[in-house]
Image (cartoon, rainbow, N blue to C red; front, top):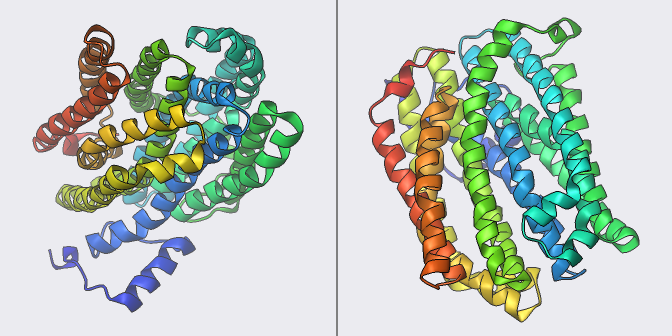
Length: 465
């Protein structure tokens, strides 16, 4: 057990580990200090997720200059696009679990072969999503409760975003592959490249093409990130090296990936679809409230995604250590990561309670929209510590290949509790948007408590993939 003890970290070693984390140097996360392993994985994963959140903030920042109808269009499109994210995350989750398990077993060839099979699944699924989004873009906005003006001006944005959903799917999936292999720095740099293109192109293309330009900039940015990923897959960075022969469908691996991915996808579809319903409830109160809610969600995501990045470290550590036959080390990694994530979320909670006004005002200048966004941030942040611990536990289940457990928890807490509670509070009791905000806090806190009780039972340690 001596190799599990934390090693002292001073300023000099901290800087060394930081450079090591960003370098992409291959590490064995099945031995040595757990705290060092969390640090080396978390730094690039946090920066990766920070960049993913920047996508949302950059778009809403520049689109906010066009008007509240444009903000509503982006928000409603993203709410439905979260279904695509769910499929991408579900498949990415399966790839992470399987690649991590094979890397823990020191089987590089099977890790690479599994990666390619996941990409083949993604390509087939995305074809259907893109066609549906392009054909039914106006219907999507209308179903979400958008006004005729929003539908008329925003349909082209929705059409372009859905038409280019292949880059969303691959960006999520391939980053999941690299995270499972323990090479989180490649995943991080792909998001930095994608955001760099988006930040540069967004104001220019919006100036010339309006809302359509925002969609084009985002799609090009993500596409650049995917090109970077593919380069490293072909080059053979770390434990993953794809070659031509792996592109022959391997139905055994495809079935194994699918069995994890479909429950992982359902897990996130349950959550994502519930957010769509929550947005639909918010739509009862008009475009100004929709815009305020969407601004708040973008800010929340901006700070939640770094915490999600740290929780991804738990998934990699669980997968690799189970592959190496070390379930006790896997569990220790989860508890340590949960503690660090909770501390980060304490800081974020205080920031939103006392500093939400200038944050919101930076992104939006309309007073009515500001008021709704600030209120949402202050209420929802009350449960942030629960969110931080809960996402680590859920990612630990997923990293073990046990996507079924978080799926059941999400189904109960979102659909049997959050949605009815939000509707009752907001509409029946007449609390308006506050009712939705309080329902979010209640549901997310409940998810954490239930996940904690189930995790302690330890059945996740026995999952075979």
